[in-house]
Amino acid sequence: MDIDFDRLIELQNLDEEIKKTSLFLEKIPHQMKEIDRNIDEQFKKVETAKEKLGINQKMRRELEADVQDIKEQIRKFRHQQSGVKTNKEYTALLKEIEEAQNKIDAKEEKIISQMLVADEIGDEILTAAKKANLAKEKLSKEKEELEKKRKELQENYKQLSEQRESLLPEIPKDLAGLYQQLFAKKHGIVMSPVTDDFCSMCQIRIRPQVLNELKAESQIILCENCGRILYWVKKSA
Image (cartoon, rainbow, N blue to C red; front, side, top):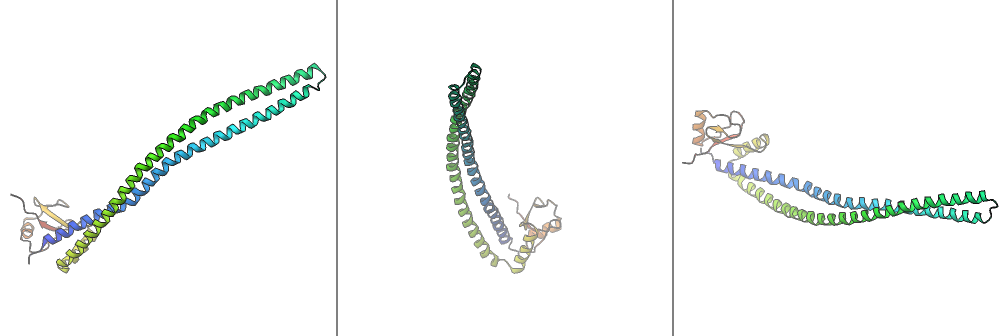
């Protein structure tokens, strides 16, 4: 009885396409998450810069509060000057006022420095926000393309599965059963073409007698080494 190897080869090709399509579909959710992670990462940079600005503003408020406290001290020192009775006491208050004023000058320099830093952080926020929005636009388009690809792959997977279901009844049950058993054991690769007298999957040389039987295509022959179904590939002239 001649074996319809063409049907088996077609089944193998369908299974390989189904497997590849399935692998692509499995990767898409991870790719989607990676895109979302990249978008979040860009906007985190904006938030980080805003937090820096918040810290800067808090520091300036604290410095400004310190300046006001020192000014209040100076006001009290000057009020005390009107009541002192000795030059020594008056000179001491002058020294306190001078030191307090020096503290104010130092803190106001820090305030100005922090204001300059705030300007830099403001520029950093604007730059980060611009980059984040551009990245979101670009990555969102990539996500749309992935979603489109996912739908195409799902439709392709459905069509391939339907073709497989239509093909199976055309293969004898015992042969289809053997194929399914080997499919599970051999990681989905059941058929192995014989080219140049070698099994294509495991590269073992096929014995001459077996080669003659393969060419006759009258029986199923399993590779003595890898256990897959062998089939003869006619060489082109």
